[in-house]
Structure formats: C-alpha cells, structure tokens
Image (cartoon, helix red, strand yellow):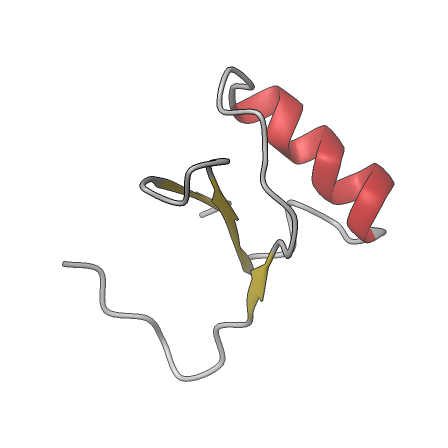
Length: 60
C-alpha cells in the first residue's frame, strides 16, 4: 500500500492508454498530451482500454 503525502497531486488520464508503452512512453505522454512535467512529483494514472488495469507514474 502506498500512503500519499498531504501535498500529492494526482492526475488521471481520461482516455485509454496503450499499455505496451513503458515508463519513457508514459512520461512522453504526460509532457506532450497533458502539458505537465512528469518529474514534478505528481502521480499520473493511466488505464487500459478494457479498464481492467491501471499504471501509475510517479517520480520520487
């Protein structure tokens, strides 16, 4: 279990993400599509097309 800190920002992608993408691909998606910095310490949540899996990208 991950216990988030009080100031943790969580961003959730509204569209399904190709789960063949790795960490670098998701970080690029955050930069280009969301216009945010993936190294800011925020958590970025992505879901699969069938909505049965999620990936969370967090820079620590």
